[in-house]
Length: 259
Image 1: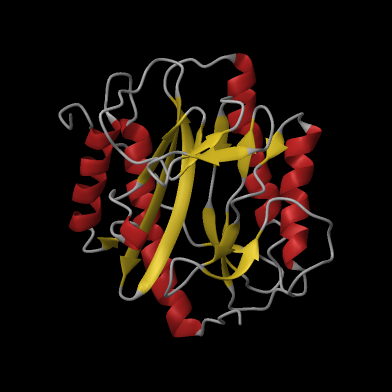
Image 2 (image 1 turned 180 degrees about the vertical axis):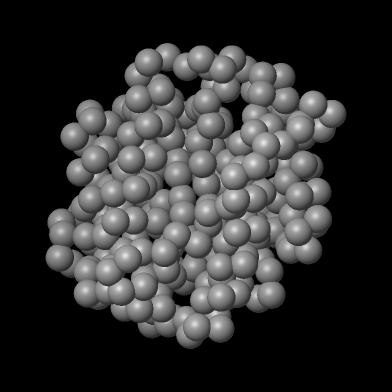
């Protein structure tokens, strides 16, 4: 059953969504050559704690990080560690926070320095796929309308979508119904209704769409080891105008002394 949030619950999700967005954006500002993924994770822990929230990922089914950090051919669920960011890397930052009983879930892919043209185009395409998917989050639409819009953008650009991992409902729990694949024919699946909250989450690969899970049980790699880009917003169904819950205020961050 797909949970429907009432007005009070939606307001709480707006708050948790903005917190997740602020953390995401501060981390994105802090991606630079030489920083380790563990340093970024520790900074994320500090930011989440300062917001009075808690990580929705830490301890989830045994996951050891406060956020997920996936580099280059790591699609999602990368565990923070000793890896240093190199020039030309792309880094997926996936943030989930819980505040006042509700979760905000969001992700962005950041380029470290100048990337190859095709990799930069991959990142831009994945972000465009996110926007196209969100545009379908309207009452009366079907879940697969989101899926089809995402796939259409990716495939038209010459890339592939990941089929083994999908978007999802989100609210009191990190993963709720419905599942939201990044592929499929339009006009299928559940109807979208006001009050539903969905994590729209395209994962777009430079090469094939096949993936593998590493021995750590978490990190998902592209099967051909080519780069992957990942974006995500938590979105509420609100009539014919989707409401993105994981947007933050514009700000500048002084990060010089963080690492």
